[in-house]
Image (tube, rainbow, N blue to C red; front, side, top):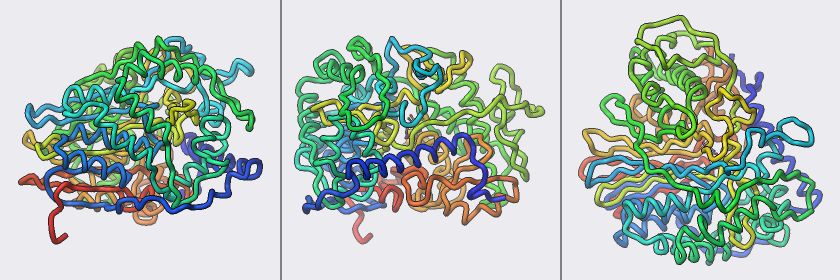
Length: 622
Ligand code: GLU
């Protein structure tokens, strides 16, 4: 049965509740504060055109935003490398996509170094403060968990120590040619002169109006004169321009050991409440010592072989690399599917199995023993693949596999222990860069929720994350993703680079909470197995099976494949309310590297209003 409006999983319920609450919040804001009446539009600077596909040579950038892509390309044109361009593009996204990423958040960066042929990663995930207790998400007033929305998402208690500035500095130190000041300058200029508000920015502001109005700093910045900025008007952020310039001049020590850090800690402990709303805002415990203790980790990628490609991804604390890798390993040892629908059935079954293992085993490796090797072992995948029936979808949830004992021989499926509750946000942003020397960066960064914690650091122009909501909400001592002081919450971010014969051929990633994993997988499946071009692989409708009773899918996927897949026993729930940002799954930014240095940069044609791809020297005649 195709369940467009069928029973919802807990996960779907969380997502829908969130969307509905934010929609209601906006309505409340409208009645109480007239936030709906958009500010009158003043003509803004003309944004660069949005181009979803660009082909050529000499370097490439793909991101969700035309200003950010243009800044990255400019860095490449002036002789910067892929890392310089990635940092400059990311900083620009902090200006134009401030609700998805920025100085107050974290992320994961995968780098291919052309000179050495090595792939290395940076884990720039936010960390929990040292004083965070296992019961941090329990309301002392009631003894019950805080409601996820709005209490937990709009709080100091969910703010992790930001990792993004440390990630930028670490990447530049290791591989870049620009100083941090130079890499941030174009974004500072952009924040100063402003950008033209597009419908996505206006919608996201409107969806967050109540949260922003709760804090003096956030309301002043994002709701000028109490209103959502009108589409077509210019949005300037001089505070952020100054923050970028000071960060460049003073270095990241300004945040981790200095005055900015003290301001961040104070904001987390005493958010600047406006008194205009009655949203409860649980406070956090972050101190300057937590900031001083922060490190971005340079670490080895995950690596698996798939049909002649070497697939590199993020090792834990992200579950991206292990879950993408395990799914591909399972797919690789299944019989060749008869047609596209059979291939999609295999895809949905493989991700359910891999998500069961992700939930059971993956957390911050500094705190829990993550069996990364076993999860990526072909023999383990073979045994997991035994559970994929060629004609019948398994009943979800499926149980996790046994990583301590496996031999590739099929066994009867075990009973599942329970459903993994998914509260990851649907925000985040991804960018991919490549340079003339053949270096490649795949970088996903976030502040978690769209709008993060909703709290702008007063006078600094950036939002703090609410990344700690990625910890399991209910504490269970056996859960690898339980709250622990100083720990990194498990992520799904999956920046990925594929090599063939030692050379990069494809780099990609996406936002979208836990759907990031399935989005990356589906694009790989479309491109490598189903014969689509990269632009077609990115544009194709998406579905996400994360070990829940229903497959969450875009309406277009259900329209195209729902009936055929229902005959296997797959059930569908349409993603998000129609017309809301949650009705789309992911927003891919990718680059394909062809023979002779040819580059194809690909962004979304329509999701999130369309992304922006560019190359340094476009191929003429296209
Ligand atoms: N917090 C999520 C993660 O780390 C990302 C949030 C999102 O994509 O919206 O996986």
